[in-house]
Length: 258
Image (cartoon, rainbow, N blue to C red; front, side, top):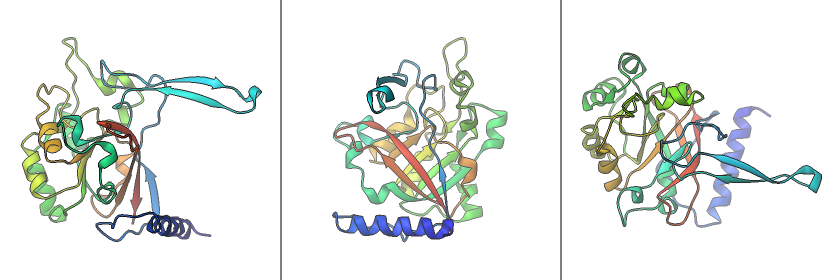
């Protein structure tokens, strides 16, 4: 059986099962021929937000006892994870309240790797977005906008990924706060990036976070393998853990390619 048929069969079975469990309607039809994992692997020693809770893994039961069992410990924001609107805004959506239709979304990928290579603190501006739209068309409603800065390639070297200077200031790219209004005007489902934060490393007010989360849009941080995604045409499935009342939670993020 071909990979295309296997993937199509999986999607069909998943949709059929969901239909019997009170499924939500998708915002668009879904089809794909390939899949790519956009999730950073979890392991001890991985990069995490300074002052946060690192990932640790403790063996509780060994094979000699009949099976293998571990306990994990980490913060909500360790690894590839989703920021729910409740992360910054009391009363806004928690991770378990995010609509499924928003978590299965067409991907819009804006690549700024060339600019980041010249400036680690680069921020995506409204002009960058408009330039992308001039080439690819207006960003569709209900899409997931992803900033590919190339920073994901540094993840396995935490010191380079965090990139903190002697003054304890981090240096990595992000979204310019002025970009939020334009993206909200496009009525997107959410935003993603391959760094520790949607705001650039030196941000002190997290203005982009505030604008997007206040508008009840979700965010994904620490994405991986973004070079595998085209500028348009892919669909992303955000398998965030439905932690009741959670402000953030880990997610297995999968890109489906046409």
